[in-house]
Image 1: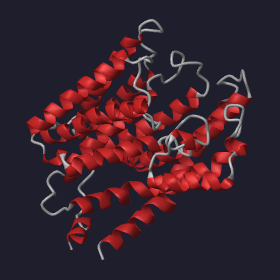
Image 2 (image 1 turned 90 degrees about the vertical axis):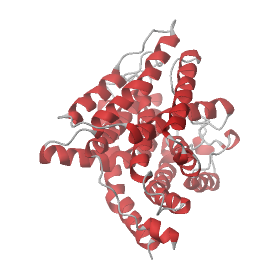
Image 3 (image 1 turned 120 degrees about the vertical axis):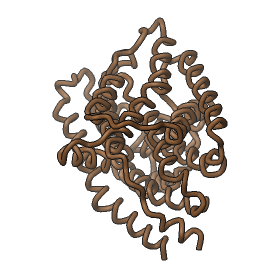
Image 4 (image 1 turned 180 degrees about the horizontal axis):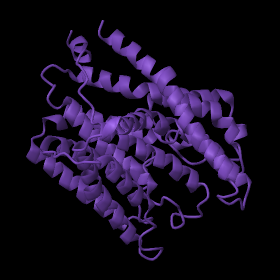
Length: 374
């Protein structure tokens, strides 16, 4: 009965601007990955810091989890919480892996020359494991990038998202503001320390099942997620006009700033990225939570962006694999020369995400929610 009661909890009103900003960040991730196929190094990458969108998503998630659940634990069980999170996230995880499997053999290229040698049974096994988000060991990799989810690379961040949810439900929801503040400060210090001392000078990584990549993943997740939770508990929001426009522009500028420091000062770039995650992203979430969508058009834009944000993030990367493989097979092709293919990839990602949302994700979640309340 407790689980039935928890699943019947009504949804709280959304923050429309935050929904819209999640969509803006997700769309910038797609653009970042398309442009990444043409870069020769992190120094030449356009939308240079686009991977920080993952850290922004973690902070948004922590904020939303705190807002949605912190005051509901008197009528919510841990099992009920996990069930609600699985209903929200897992259907699109499954779809992302299916799309990754369907697209896999089309990614055969000079970049991944062994794809055509992967037997179908092994592809299907990796897909089934991917449905659970259990990371695969490097020895089972079928692509060559040592990803924990080689059919749909972004699955790594959902893996850490689930870990954050587990930590919240089992332990950290009970933390006082002081204890949570200490945790956030320590996690922030670890983030700065890693960013300014790591060999690459950036906050990329977290997608492989080895000691270093797991450390990077936990470092990237711990501060933003629980800083978002702390923000939801402590901030007093004031109304900010046109915050969606200002915050969207701020995200675009942050992601597009050229590499800081150059090849001789990696620490400078690490400092820029860590301070962005520590200070600027919480400011953006604060501004977005205090903002409102001005007018019907702005409301519709925020809703559309928010609706497709998760589907486009979790389904776009199989298309990126295809596009990146195509670029590798056409050495010397410029971005201008590849523009029709780039636009087709981007448009395809949006169309697939919207189709998945309307034809699969929303109906499946409604069905699962109805079953959970019987």
